[in-house]
Amino acid sequence: KNYDPSKFYRPSTSVDTVIFTVFDLALQVLLVKRGEYPFKNQWTLVGGFIDLENDQTLEDTAKRKLEEKTGVKTPYLEQCFTIGNKIRDPRGWSVTTVYFALLPSENIQLKTNSDDITSSSVSAVKWSPIKNNKIKESLAFDHNYILEKAIERLRNKVLYTSLPAYLMPEKFTLRDLQTVYEIILDRTLESKSFRRRIERANILEPTGETRQDVKRPAQLYRLKENIDTYFFLRNIEGAT
Amino acid sequence: KNYDPSKFYRPSTSVDTVIFTVFDLALQVLLVKRGEYPFKNQWTLVGGFIDLENDQTLEDTAKRKLEEKTGVKTPYLEQCFTIGNKIRDPRGWSVTTVYFALLPSENIQLKTNSDDITSSSVSAVKWSPIKNNKIKESLAFDHNYILEKAIERLRNKVLYTSLPAYLMPEKFTLRDLQTVYEIILDRTLESKSFRRRIERANILEPTGETRQDVKRPAQLYRLKENIDTYFFLRNIEGAT
Image (cartoon, rainbow over all chains, first blue to last red; front, side, top):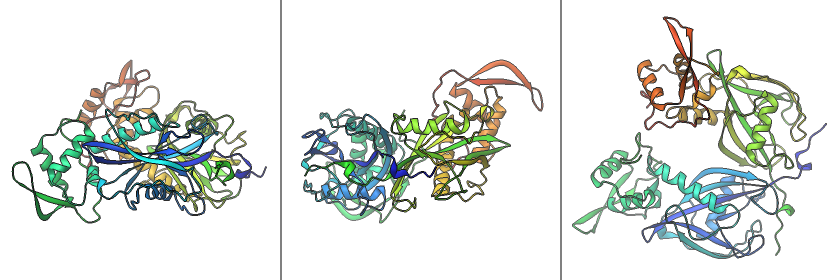
């Protein structure tokens, strides 16, 4: 019994990326409008099939699709989970590996063009604001479920890491960073203990410049060169 | 341009499960010996391709393979990560979703027979003890790497959850449970604070029976009926 895997009908295998940024005081997710069936003209997350010639790894697929739609080359990218079953795609058994990406909102150029033959054409691209862990659009496939899981993962990780730093522009004040934490956690934080926490993480360096803030000029910081994500021993205060 | 995914050569998609148990004072992982090329006669983790007719989800594939080899129906099963690339399988681009499972060692009947046409034949099955996060066998494919990642995930999660409870026999003493924690964390724990921590989790109930222990009869406990994994707010003491 010589077993040859290709003899067996294989599930389709894709990568879907939940692309987050922050602007207008809200966490935003990038959506694309499908140009083909199934779910023609319906919004979905950014994703596509694996290009077996050019993609060396699953991460390559995620990065390629993300760069194609946003022009961004090296976002923060993390694998979230994989979902595979008989019913999520009307075309048959399908497996998708989900990533989430964090992008500073300042250097993104949205594009719909896609010379990527492995994924269906896209007729529009837009950001959608997240309110109470949800967006208003009803997405194709199981993408609303996927989005909710990714938001849950992000919010959980923000409790004990420096992840929001990847959403910041090149220069920012501690107040700006605290605001992004508060947007993601959906509640206000006590400023003094927030500052102590960030200082202890030792991931920022002053730029020497300041910006006029509400009360007085505020120091502008930047993320230190190729710094890794910082893991705090304890969740941020006030977290249940 | 009507895009039909099946026109594209698809990667092979499999599920691999790192099956853990504890006996002889060591964490053990289940290995099977491949009966076919590639890697004929080499040990691997338990895994196989998705049976598109009978498996409804990826979890079904993992459970089917695990039951086939151990006779165990409902182990603790958790998705760990997915790895996909061009080089991990000599037959071509391949994606595998990795699970880890926790089994009490008392009710396992190892079997090699496999009427599962979707995976290659297996000539032997055995447990291998884990020492310093490694086993002595050099496994097929990237399975040593996968095993190390799964051990890392398990050890990390044991710091803040009640996961070891799923490795216990039906009745056990608090001393037995502490020993399993110590085996996985590879260090001794302070008994009094361990007992306080487990009592606070409120996941055990006394069976009313005792067992003669070193000093005096020790109370035998069991896991409460369909109790969920308990998440502690703080890592176990002494953990860096």
